[in-house]
Length: 512
Image 1 (cartoon, rainbow, N blue to C red):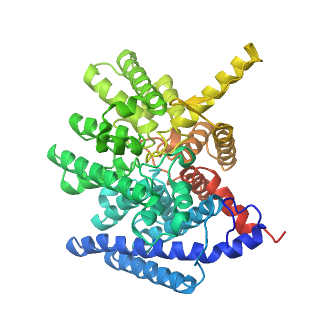
Image 2 (image 1 turned 120 degrees about the vertical axis):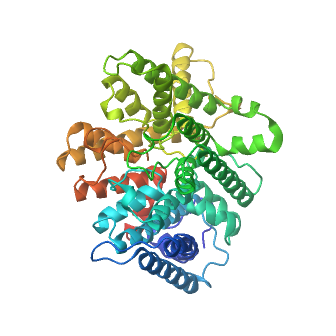
């Protein structure tokens, strides 16, 4: 069993053999849960039947077959591991490996309805769409979602909704947990987990609280969008993919054809979904709106959002390429796109690929920021940028006054060197992986703008990029090898970079 909180005393091969029963048990429960969720689009496929695409299965059979496979695989995994997990303690390292394995396998099962039904051609494209969904990236290979059956569209939206708060967090909230080890499972998946503070003393209660808030946001936005003219189905799916900061849309032009009031509803829910959900919990508990303004991360996040939205608004008003655009339209499009990219949602209210170079540069830089820790957003996270700037300021003060002891403080608390180092290492690693991914994509034939923006977008779980993968385009034309690179980047971004790296290390290591 795992003897200490780090598991560092065990050789990788031995750790892998000990981890396998736990990994299979947890994965089994998650596969069974996935099968249960697949029952929802299966019911929809019977209510609104849709003929199969040429040479493929109907949506009902495709979803039903996937449901059966997920339930069977899950039941077998639980059965073979049931007597081998008693007393096992999951360490932080192991939690990252388990989370990575679960995300990869869930992506495989999630891709099967697309593949069996034939609505997305080729397995790599199907896997790309599924991983993009569960990682809430929103990069799509579907040019026109309106031709797809309602059941497949519902499943596509559900993948983002389930991935937004996290499939492992859902496991911790409602399924049999492994005692105190659930803490490390939770921390391995929640965005910005190393900097995330529990909302309640018990991690399982925290997971439940987050999912309840998430559900309330989803229901509220659905009703509001339905009330301003969207069909209930479109309202529900856009709520799914807004609160998850995912970006999949049922419209071929994303949100561009929606009304101005619908845009502002989405802006509000993108913005609050990009905030730390612990702050929402504290507000619901009666602590007042002051809890937000006591958070340095929130102040940085909101400052970046207001600043970027204002710059884009002014650019749209002052650029001669958009004659006749009024203040309301400029304000709406400016803040919609700033919020969409900063929170890594990836919706578009207009084809920003046609905007000025300055506006596109602002949006590109926002891909390296992200929302808050403990949100549904991807990206680096505002908290890491705050810590990095504080660390830089501390070093400058040390140079000016070497004898004075300098500390990094966040929200009136002294931050340990480990968290500061983690933030700096994460930012450097993010930039390095972005550069490597971009260079590989250029080697595969993509132009520089498309390759660099696609790498930043997928690693940051944003979705739309620039050039040939811009907001008016899809990722369908990316070479197959390029899609595989972007799939790895999407998984790395959602698992906070280290999770997938640790998974590969453990699974490929030899006995030492």
